[in-house]
Image (tube, rainbow, N blue to C red; front, side, top):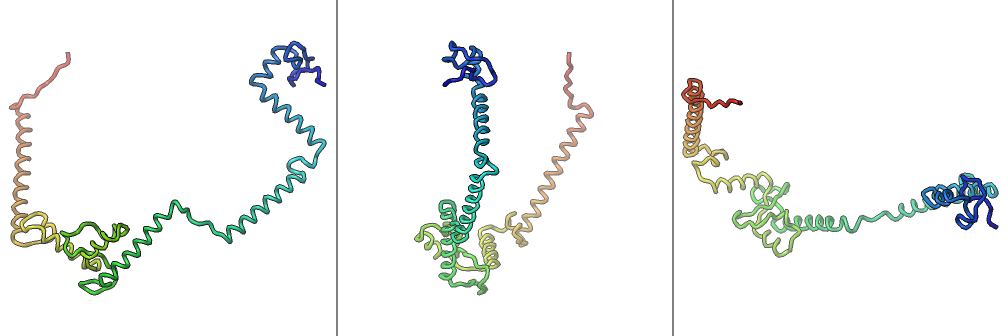
Length: 243
C-alpha cells in the first residue's frame, strides 16, 4: 500500500493526489524529483536501503563478511595459478611486431656467411680472416652495396656477389683511396687534398694561393677607398629630414 507522504525525502509533507498520481505534495516537489535532483534522490534512497539491509545481514557487509573473505581467497588462488602457468609457459614474442625483423636478421647473417665462404674466407691482399669486407673489383660495375641489400632476391644478390672480392678493412681503405686517386687528375685542388705533392699539384696550389691573396687585397683596398671618399665628401651622403 502506497504511503501518504511525499516521495521527495527532503520533504515530510503529506502527498496530494493532484500531483504525480498522489506521489508528491506540490508541483515544486514533483519538478525537483524529476529534474537534476533525481539522481541525488535515487542515490540517497539506495544508501538508506543498503544500510537497512546490512543491519539485518551483517555477514554480507563488505570488509568483514564471509563473501568478501571468500573473494579475496579466490583472487589469491587465481593469482598463484597464473604465476605457475606463466612460469611453465613463457609468453611468446609478438608475432606481428618482431617476425619481419627477426627473419631479415637471420637472412642477413646467413647470406653474409655464404658470401664470405664463396669468396674464399680470407683477404685477397694480406690473407687475414678478420674484419672482412666485400669490395667490388671494378667500381664502375657496382650496382649496389652487398651488405645493405642482403635480403633482396637471390638472383640479383648473387650476380652482384660475383663482382666482389674479400678484403680486410685496412686493405679496403687503401684500394678505395687508390681508386679515387686514379679518377682524379693531377694539378687540381682535390688531388692535392688527397696528399699528392707532385710538381703539377704544387704549382696549382701556389697559383691558387697567389690569386686568392691578390683578390683579397683588392677587395680590402676598394673598401678603404670607399670609406675615405665618404669621409672627404666626394660621395655625398643622403640625409632625410622629418617634417
